[in-house]
Image (cartoon, rainbow, N blue to C red; front, side, top):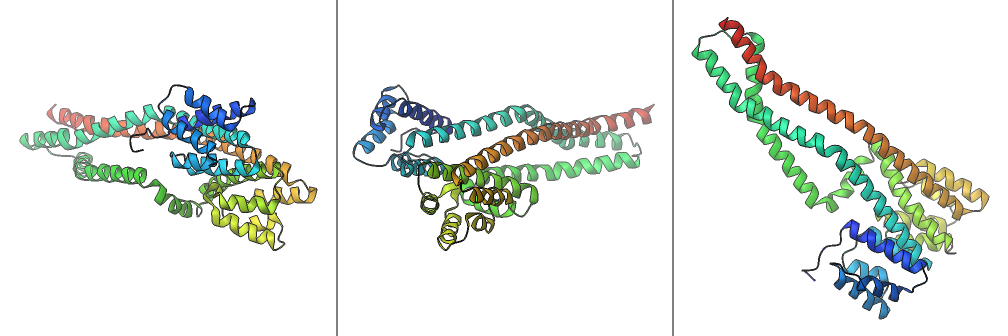
Length: 342
């Protein structure tokens, strides 16, 4: 088990999409897994484990959890199994992972070049402050030249940069390393902090609501009643909000309308309450949750596009400032030195 390759999001996406296509083509789950196992790949052992587990009566979601799939994938497949439509659940999960990977790829492509240039410029600025500027300072004193106030201020600033920048860069590197290694444990804390700010709160609420409405629509579309669907969502920890779905299920069981129960949850945006209230009045929660899911997905797509349009010029502006600082550190002492010598 320890030597098995890890399932990346791309590998999970490809497996789920292929599995959905095979199931929609009429193959049963066991035969579909057998076909996927017969293909060449690094996860053949895991696929064989999944196939044997399904043959022995083990749910597919349990097998996926055992081989290292993420909790989101496992939870959505559990909901699909309970709804009796694994093909739809696998297809939707694969599409979600594909969309998520597309976001990450576009963001990486957009930021890779500016970040590389920024790192090089920061290194150059540190070299100028720690090596070049002290040499200029020694030249001024060796020639008994008088330092003007701006030049003295620039030398003081360069000494401060040379002393502080290594500690800042080391702290930033440690924070990034801790964030990457312990992201699962610190994610709830980020959610608590993010919910306190209006801009980030809206995005967090929309993201969580999108996942929840997608699973709710899947369950309602399979003919499961609302209360049972909410219990299933709590059981499968949909969107990592087990306590929230349990709270909503208890409220609905006591006779509270779904829209009012969702209004009391901090991770649900007001639009969810309003659209579900409209669906309750029309008596069509299934299509109401579907329309809400598509609206939330479109909103997140637009928000991502807007963020990209803001981040790119901001990175360019920051890069220009770093280049300007490096140029000033190099050129200003030279110009003052030439002026005094002439």
